[in-house]
Amino acid sequence: MWVANCFLAATAGALVALAGCATPAPFPLRNAFPTMETRHIPELGATGKAEVGAAMVSTESVLRVRGISIAKTVSETVNPPGVTEVVRGDLELFATSSEGNYYQGRSTYSVPGTSIPVSERSGVFVPDDKSRPAVIYHFVQGYRYGTKPVAYVPKEIIKITSESFRRELVYSGVSQNTITVVYREFKNSFARPAFTQELKYDLSQDRVIGYQGARFEVLNAGNTEITYKVLSLLQ
Image (cartoon, rainbow, N blue to C red; front, side, top):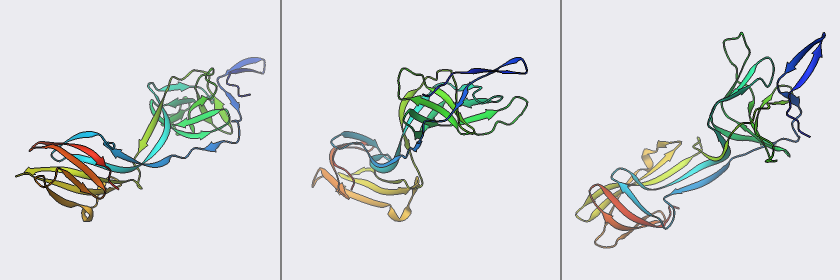
């Protein structure tokens, strides 16, 4: 059974209190892998508005990562004599076990008398058993766990990576019932000039416009913004 209580050790007749405890993590630990997915904004069937220069629709490949968010920085002497600190913000799922989930974010380990804290493998452990609190963990020759409860909220984290690919249609205005839309592609948030194309549509012929599988019904188009309904998404 996983134990996260501090213990006392007697040495040379003196009682020395040690915060935290070193216990083996319930093995095997299983690495957690994010999932790559395609995100569409806005969604199919939605009615949207876009100002001149803004994207009417975008399709992007992103990484979706399970995570948690902590509102306050937490610290504890989990691995004496140093202090483990987990910085507030988002923590990503690092690994899972039969007992719960291990989340990592920004964290440091500092020993009194030293000026520079060092990064260590530490974060927040969330047990599957909801009657037990989430606590700080620190890995050093085994896992050590704190005793102070850590408040958190579950969160899904969307990440843009070097493999992320985004396509979008940008509204560029209207002139004599003809609207201009610019198609752009991005790799890792950088535009690819060779894949930028200007498109023009005569609304007097049809209020439905499209490009690469995407279809929109133009409800209103003006010099400042366009209102439209998404009939199908970019393929």
